[in-house]
Image 1 (tube, one colour):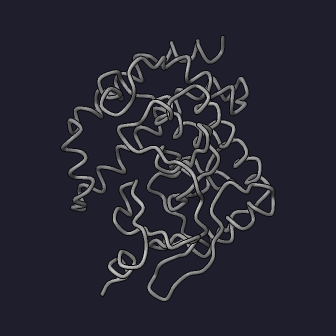
Image 2 (cartoon, one colour; image 1 turned 90 degrees about the vertical axis):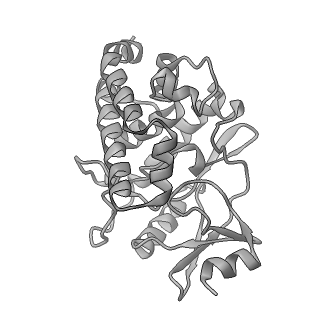
Length: 272
């Protein structure tokens, strides 16, 4: 019996996300999931975050001999696509920005383990001295009473600029998508420029960071496209299926062209 089969027999399967689909289980107060290659360094970082006042992430418990990790279960609601309207309210958006700022404030005081081979798949290409989450998507944010209260799944964490994490979050939570692409997963009627400004305000971006944000979002979108292309080229059935269901590469072309065409609108709204 595989560890996944054993988990299914003894625990509750937790759904959401693509990378570990079908391999994450809850057993009482613990979650057991595949351990990332950087698990030891990542667990040390998560403990350090708590020591620096950030209690909005799972606490590592142990690594198993089967290559899995156990962490504390974080109760709450996680939005899965198609995203419910409660997850896309302005209150929810502001809470995501505030939560991300809390993560970065705590992370800024922690020295990143440079010996760890942090994953580069979604890492900031310009690098940085702080460990970014890199995947603050709806499936990785836990809500209570309509507000973001915790972040989970730090598997793609890597050193980078705080602004890179904000740009990655903006892609999902604003969302930074053309209307046709957004309609497939998000509620209708979202005011993208206004929501981008709300995210910047709730995080507390400086004027210089606001001026840089649209360009960094374009950069982050290109990285996400490359991430998907790499998975598809490697024969990953999950990403291959998702790509085929979401208009293939035409969607990515459309999103990237739309971001460039609206760059000045976003800049004006952020700096006004």
